[in-house]
Length: 143
Image 1 (cartoon, helix red, strand yellow):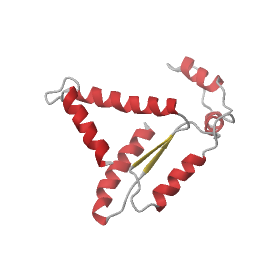
Image 2 (cartoon, rainbow, N blue to C red):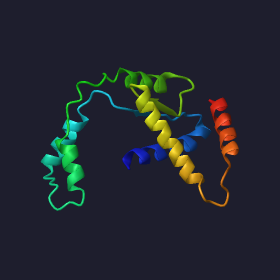
Image 3 (cartoon, rainbow, N blue to C red):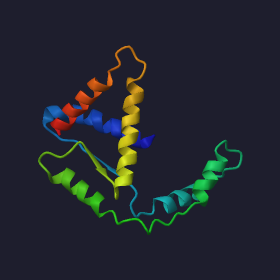
């Protein structure tokens, strides 16, 4: 939820700041070497979290019992480069998808397309495939 909240905040902030000619960007990184899993488990333990009695005990036990060592992932140099670009370029992108491989890029783009398809489905002003493709072509051309 927090990631979607940050995306929404970024879009609203960008709209608000546009009149001041201030650009707003968001960097959305994929899986890179970090301590995120270790830190999560440490915070949960420090706060006395237990899966006992949880409706999600099985899923959480799988997450908590899974591999926490992310040493095999790439260093986040590409993520740092995206931040540097966003902060120093005269015309930064609104969104920077920074992933270490094609597979992660595909999962992310497919998820965005699925949200678009769900948003468009069975509503009174739904667009046809051809209309959606035309809109996508226009959006790509604007980039």
